[in-house]
Length: 103
Ligand SMILES: [Zn+2]
Image (cartoon, rainbow, N blue to C red; front, side):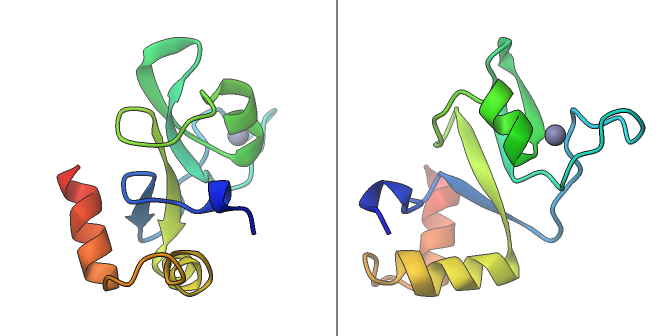
């Protein structure tokens, strides 16, 4: 795993369930669940939930406060914590989460 792939507080947010992609109309365009809540590159003031495909098209390629967050469910966070955050961050999950809200 590359260091650049490690998510820092402010770059992710926890959701109970992944929302639907805002670019999906459920008919002509059917997407996988959204993985990002991000600023759109077509209008820097509008935000959208985006699946990976639409994120690569409409995201701004940057995560963080004011740019976008990766959406994670509790289960994914646990996995992420064990695999990605834990080796670099010795704080508890709750501290990381509290920090991400504060920033
Ligand atoms: Zn999509």
